[in-house]
Length: 67
Image (cartoon, rainbow, N blue to C red; front, side):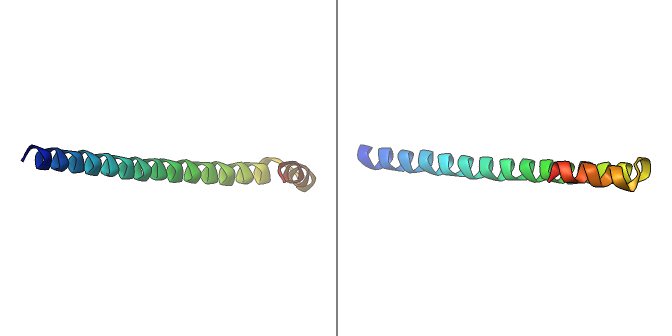
């Protein structure tokens, strides 16, 4: 009986550990996606500002530096 209780306790602890790991992966994936979206938005705004404030030659020069 004691061995069965230990086995069930171990299975519960293992299940909780696996669920925690899955939740952490999901959380970090969501955070990475949010960061990636913010970077894309910043890049879009930067391009819009360059088009507004710079001549065509300046935009091409900056574009070649980032590639």
